[in-house]
Length: 69
Image (tube, rainbow, N blue to C red; front, side):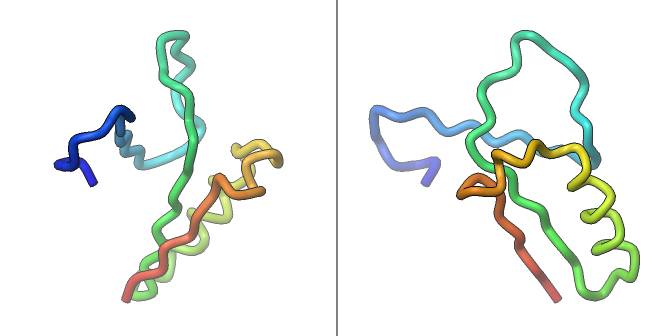
């Protein structure tokens, strides 16, 4: 996806925790992907904790849960 030549620009921002620091220059967030590792007993607990910081309007097509393990 990053190698394809197209008019759109793709930016990926990785964060270890939420909320993100307030920054006026941050680009618009179009999608949030939460990664849940089934081998870690704290992974789901952390995702549940971080969900409190996500606006409810994002849950209609802008949040994805990726489960690994």
